[in-house]
Image 1 (cartoon, rainbow, N blue to C red):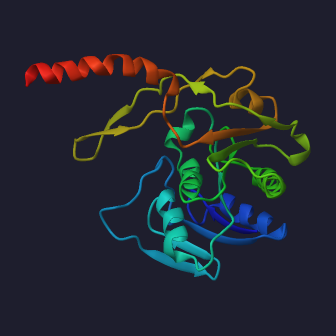
Image 2: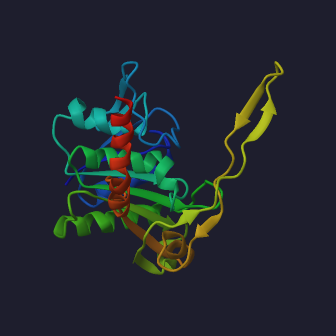
Image 3: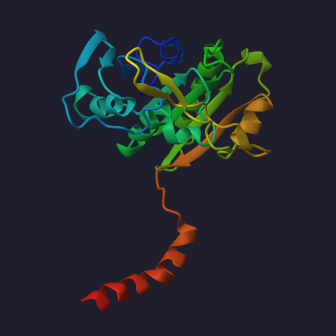
Length: 259
């Protein structure tokens, strides 16, 4: 398969290098298009107010001066001469569990691949200190999942969010399908003062686990499993459609009464 690899930790991050090496060792043709620097938390942001510069690192690698979404969009919309078969984003140096997917540049890169019509996987290594030590384990898990997708593809609107415990391969308990859990509200922002006496703010750490029981990605990883969470782009709250429809008529009446 032809695989496009991207991430949000930057083109020089160890996770993306190890992921590409393992995919190539499995016989895949791998191209890399990744940000010039760490763009964690960039989510699905797309650069529209300035051109995106791209620097070629080697025949199969491009450094993109933009967000993870920029990387995949540019790669699939003009940069690559051939269309890849799949997008694999990662390996992120920390977790993307539960609500993390909303902010994650790793997940956003995979999501952009899905927007543009390709199967997509986001892979993260769940380290405690944002410094993963067992990228090889996550890379092997990614290779196994890609191999499975070749013989048994998923529905076209599905993205796989994969979180792998930061441990040696032989210590994994297995693979587990899990829904996204939830965190408590994020910790407060941290106020400081710059050298000129002006206030500055640091975004606080994410909230602790809240909905993290059996069946969730939090629980799967905590029990030593590779958590595989199928997610989709459609954000429609279908259960609320009927309720909202029931009071839309009243909104129309208020407009007519003003006429």
